[in-house]
Length: 118
Image 1 (cartoon, helix red, strand yellow):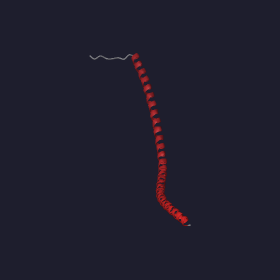
Image 2 (cartoon, rainbow, N blue to C red; image 1 turned 135 degrees about the vertical axis):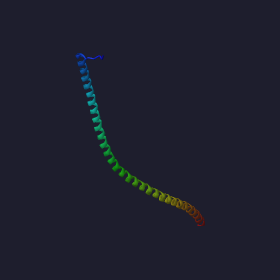
Image 3 (cartoon, helix red, strand yellow; image 1 turned 90 degrees about the vertical axis):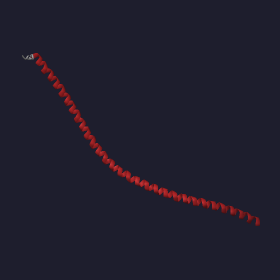
């Protein structure tokens, strides 16, 4: 013989009340989570558009930087060449100065000899 299990009305009403409370609580949690996910998705979408905009600006500025780098490199090459020319001219001037010093010493000696003769 099988025994039957009966639910009393009070137990059934408590069961329904608890079910409704849990259902409301879980529904609220799901709505809160859904709202958080929607907000996060909106922020991610906004961040994506911002990153795309920044990439476009970066590309434009990168072109400018590359052009300026090329100009600076050319300017450095010119400066290096001018420094080489200037150092060569300085060497030439130093040689001329040495020659002039030697010549002035010779002239002074000749001047002394000329003064002694007179």
